[in-house]
Length: 71
Image: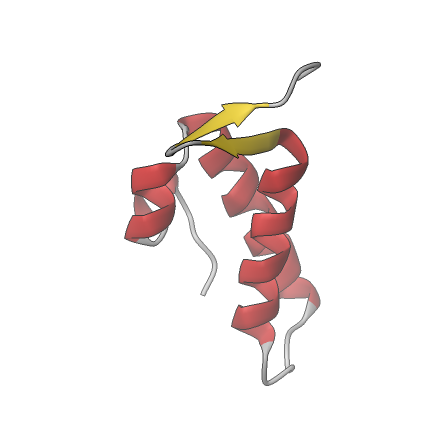
């Protein structure tokens, strides 16, 4: 199920990630979800891909996600 806006993202994503990181998550999820159509693990793969995309630009510092330097 693609996410049309950040408000549609799962609560843990919305409540922990800053808005820009949510944008990254949503876009990566939607792209991966479409790319893996027909795969029985489509949603799992899309979530893993989305988290990996966020972690390229953000890092968790304590309880907060902070943009990596150079962003």
